[in-house]
Image (cartoon, rainbow, N blue to C red; front, top):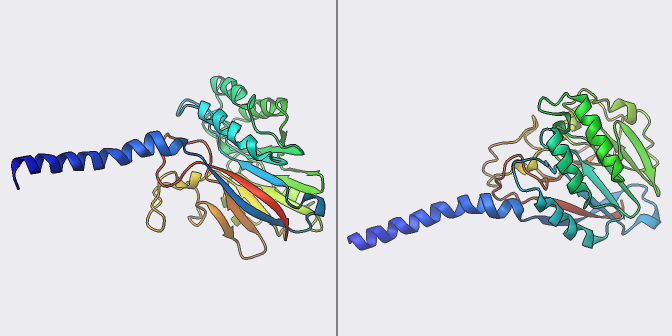
Length: 279
């Protein structure tokens, strides 16, 4: 090998090494994927068949990435004309006053369902230690002011579809038995639960149906089938996408639109666009 060939080889290696870093930092974190799929729901009223239910999760409004990306993504999401929209937690990163003010700017452009919009809290909505109830109340108040019905261990029916929402598993207010003790299996039900680890708790009272979660961000960086280095759940099966829990419950884990840190590799940010069908 000549000196010239050696230098050229080093240059190629340098480019090959830098590209994945730039891609995972500046490209993929802002390359949102609109995942379109069916959501077969038991006892779904015929009038709701074909309606759109959109799931948006883990905004993480804060200073770790440019949250104007969220507003741009919301504009694209509105083109789907969702009938129902559910926000499944972690609206902010730490719940500081600055983040609360920025959240208002984001939610001014938020996606709203033509029939109903619901939300639940995530662990980050409870502040840095995930236990600050005052922060959580402030976040809820902001969201209510923008037309989002917050479900805090509560359920609410809208146009024949019943939404049951838990407070976050790691929060002081995780009390799902308050809502699951009253669930009616003859209704069309959907559960909103930020942390999918709650699926392994003895809280479900025979529930059979869909559970929509977030929290994991899909690991943010992974090589499918090989490694997912960071996954904030005990049950490492709970990465992303559809998971059959083998007892009549179906889990869907949204990969999140926001980021804990501005880095993603092979885990694009996601907004899920479900088409409701009768199971």
